[in-house]
Amino acid sequence: MRLPGLLLGPALLVNLAIFIAPMANLAALSFHEARPSGGVGPGPTLATWASIAEDEYYVELVTGSIGVALGVTVLTLLAGYPLALFIHRAAPRWRNLLMVACISPLLVSAVVRTYGWMVILGDTGLVAAMLRFLGMAKPPRMVFNLTGVVIALVEILMPTMILCLLAGFGRLNASLEEAAASLGAPRWRVFTRVVLPLSLPGVLLGCLLAFVLTVSSFITPKLLGGGRVILLATEIYDQAIVTLNWPVAAALSVLSLAVFGLALLLYGRLLRVVEA
Amino acid sequence: MAGTALVLEGLTKRYGTLAPAVDALSLTVQPGEFIGLLGPSGCGKTTTLRMIGGLIEASGGRVLVDGRDVTALPPHRRDMGIVFQNYALFPHMDVAGNVAFGLEMRGMKRGEIAAKVEAALDLVRLGHLAKRRPKELSGGQQQRVALARALVIEPSVLLLDEPLSNLDAKLREEMRAEIQDIQRRLGITTIFVTHDQAEALAMCDRIAVMAQGRIAQLGTPHDIYEHPASEFVADFVGRSNRIAGHAADGRLNIGDLTIDAPAPVAPGPVTVMIRPHRIAFTAGGAGWNEVRGSVRRVTYVGDVLACEVTAGGAVFLVEQPTQPGVPPPEAGAEVCIAWRVADTLVFPRETA
Ligand SMILES: Nc1ncnc2c1ncn2[C@@H]1O[C@H](COP(=O)(O)OP(=O)(O)OP(=O)(O)O)[C@@H](O)[C@H]1O
Ligand SMILES: [Mg+2]
Image 1 (cartoon, chains in turn brown, cyan):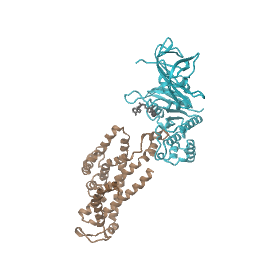
Image 2 (spheres, helix red, strand yellow):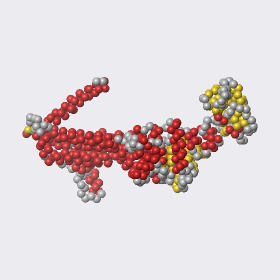
Image 3 (spheres, chains in turn red, orange):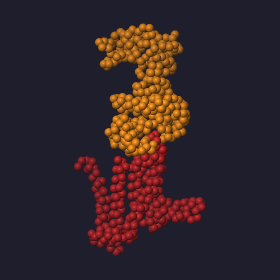
Image 4 (cartoon, protein in one colour):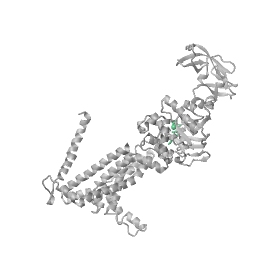
């Protein structure tokens, strides 16, 4: 093995010890059966997997989580895309400033931001007060339900989305838009035929990350969901910590890993299409 | 010829508080005319072109197409084909897709588009590369795609920003002829930006020589070359001997020499300019300026003989086609050189 290969060694070892091995352990655990009061039966058995597959609740949990993640992803994209485009087109001396402004929320942890949203979206919060002021007698409930979770997740994921979009806007430049306009394309066609196709690599990357981060999000649905919004990560937590059903928690973890794997696979496929 | 008249009226572009990049530029282009914008780098050629095409807003002035004011129109409604200095090909479309784009925007039918694209690509000799992506092409090939893309929409005005700068000498010559042919045949009013004076002289009906955002001289290639309006134009277009002198009593003093001026000149310091190839190794006669000097250096390149001749404290570069059987003069030889008085260009010199 040549030197560059050898240099990978230490990182590989560390990864093996603290990442791959526990994952393998986790996967193995899903082939055991839970015993009452937190025990784990002898394996291997497919009982846990069978119970998950048969239970309507888990099927809905997985499809529901994926659905929520897709929704949040699309909303984050819609919210982040115009901002990213604006930053990309800004004069260089403004660009850095705008970038920092956009990314600065990352300095505050998701926990703090979630609590912030609880205050803002709460029944006596800013948004409700505003709606009442505008004449709405009974503003909709926005905390401890899906609405609040989605709003907060979109906001929390926006900096990440914008970073991804900007990273993928490399092939976009003003002279291409000018060329399209000079060839007779009105602004919306410049957008659909030139800007959008060229920004797709960034869109894909941003969507992949937003999707994965939503599926694995825990704090926000836990706090803002008020126990009513159950996603894969919150359920894994409940199974492992509350119910003490480790095999089910392990199986759900493997499932979410599979969802990530599928998302990654899809991403790779689509990327090859849009970059071709 | 059905063409479009293009008029620029006091077109101005200011960037911040700097000196204007284009300064009250006025130009009337006849229908179907091929006009060259010639000037050194940074003189405002691209800026002018972009204002005509509507890609940047003019700070002042108007653009008229067939008498209609288009200054406020967005680029997609101006019907102008633009070839950009950096090509600006769409990287996500193949060559055929790039060329087809403008036709699609015009709502043309698929079959018709395919035929036109094929014809346009044949015109620039790229038919065999229709399925390639721009990044898989050489610079010259990209440039030709850009040209085909602008031509295929048969615009009323064609704006070319140094469209030949990346081609090799042979291809450039071919493309020159090609562009001229197409332009004549379609009768498209064309503005051709270049900093290559030979290209401008060879291709354009008229040339606008630009300096610092203004037109220094507008005229036919012959006018510009034979009767440059200023020292700058004479220096930029073609090559010249450039000699400091002094005008007195209607004649010109260069060092110890006294020569005739082609027209009456006001007394004072002047710059005298003479094209090297207009000076010959002969004794002059009536209507000629003649000086005696000695050969300082000889450069013989087969078809052309270049000599530096010192005379009366000045150095003259003389260029002549070589003659059969006549050996080149040797360094140090005494020679007599002469040129027509009419070929003497005289410009008043600002004293610093
Ligand atoms: N966006 C801009 N901001 C400030 N100054 C600019 C801008 N664009 C161009 N300029 C200035 O305007 C002047 C004219 O530029 P322009 O691009 O028209 O030159 P050009 O004649 O096309 O030169 P070249 O032959 O190098 O392409 C230059 O001095 C340039 O620095
Ligand atoms: Mg230029």
